[in-house]
Image (cartoon, rainbow, N blue to C red):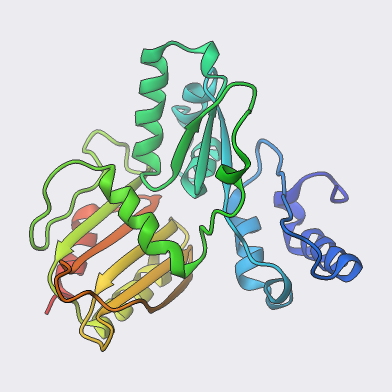
Length: 281
């Protein structure tokens, strides 16, 4: 327990102290440290602690974010209309998730469950979902996720893409952003394209994007085909923090398809697609 019981408010201080204390006491004997936040906590500050605090990141690394959804009541909270400057915590928790547990499925009918699932996919097209009763899920689903591991990003983006329908053409973008979604709604947008990108141009674009829109950009993951020696580059970002590195080279007979997924508020899909196309050689 942190001092005042609320992780989101004290995350910069108490959480760092507690993690360092645990490491000092137990050394490297931990397999996992599981942090449970309150129902209203904002995940962003907790995630950023692991990414930005050098001392913490020296000893522990963030494996992933798991969000448990109460199927009986979630739709009401996800649809709750708030003022433009007020964040809907339920939506944020879904947006940041690497894994989503759809709990209490026994309390809703098939139509309600399908509507909720579709709503969640609009917000976060990247997270894997699992249905459950009484919170009963396999441990492998919630531990060893590797949601922030650059080596595993390609597999995740690939999986996300295989869940989407539609054929992708050169410079084409398939997204979850629909006209009826309110401006300040949180959505996910995916861009899929053949062709080679200029890595310098991509770097400039993404750095500019996180600099200008970092507050509204919750997650970014991608695999791109670039004009460098390996030809394949992976990216991931949280708010204004962005990292990327070369990945395994493309196989001679492999189709070079770039895939980027953005999750955030006020996402302008047309602008994202235009900027992406501007990086194509």
